[in-house]
Length: 618
Image (cartoon, rainbow, N blue to C red):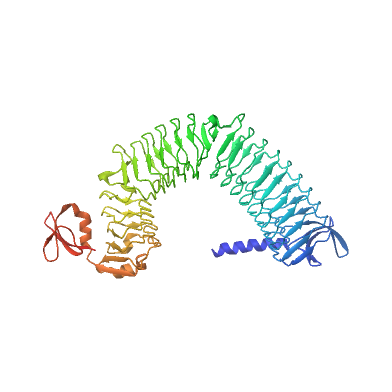
């Protein structure tokens, strides 16, 4: 780490040093070129305050030099610079020339300037308005990025390109007119211009870059001119105020998630003459014609019978989408296709073979889902956080269930895998999904039991099962994965058998109702317990029960040492109960009286093989 910091410091020092090779003349630093008799304003160690006037010429050693440029980083981080007067002799403003001049409120760029460098005015947070002259042909990357007070800017007809992130995070900008001369809008050019309401684009623009208008939340309408041929990835991502989308004939490329999470859109059209995309049958959607893939949808969309696949994130965050019919022509549902929708139920037709990752994630109103026998794969997180989903049935056809596919479905009470499935099972009516070859329980619910044949409990298997009150971990289990009981707030006690050799990260995170943990191993280090297993866990109120003679070992081993209350006791009865509960013959209290059920305290348990053991019941 020290070496990295040293390298960063050295790089910064060298950059400043390269800026600082100047000659001070009347308080301003210059790099002088004796051959061309020109001068460039250079870095001045931040020693510029108040108002600064740059002269058109300077004299040094009886030689006169014309000031033609403001060099790289010349006024970088001059926080007290309030105004600057640039002469007509200057033709270029270099990279980072006025970057982080936070007290600079306005600037007039003379007609002589032809280029504005990258980051030239980045983070000039006090700058309210800028007039760019007709001489400027290019606006560099990040040139006005994070000018948060900038409310208006005029881009002249001379400009042909707007660089990447040129106006990124200009949160005060409300409108922009892009002239006919501009042919391309760079990546993230207006990214997170959250107050931008009006955009006018000239008819010469051919490409809208990736993320160009992403997070422009106030943008309600946008006309894509017929000159545009490509719309980049995430170009209008999270434009939550946008109500309509119209794609002209000219557009031949629409990037991934170009209109993702534009959940206020009610109308989508594609011009009939477009050869690459269409809105067949007035479907209020964009379909890629050659592949019959629906790529952009809205709450008013219908899915035509000719569509064969639903693309990634097509309806994500359509919070008003409560119902939609998927036709029998569809064979695949893409990643995140219906995530965060308000669907209450959905019928997946028997034509579908794959359900992508996050496909129905966070559909919190979804109460039921029927997975047909045609489906072979369910992607990771596919139904995660469907908090109202009560039952799951996995058909024989499913051979792949991605990680956390049903994670945090807190209302689940019934889980079943069809008996003919060769990859997964629900043995012994356990109300869980077990990966057969590994004997790993991967999905559980509040009604699950863990069969004695299970060797491991997979990551997040019971996460957010807020109604899970108790669970018995059998002596067959060797490891417990990450976040297994995450936020199981109703779980009050748990016994970790001595067969367990590993406990994962945040396994008991936010198990705030836990009052007792029974750890049966004599040597805590053998658990391989992650030190973060009990994150956000109240180790002050929960009692850790350990075998007799082992308190000191637990008290000196992380994370067990975090527990305030560690008590020793005979835990052999708990072990026997987990191993042989099916073989119990009778229960007795300490007075030798036969009882019908276990009572609090020490009980005598007699097994069918004639043996008897004490058992602690809390």
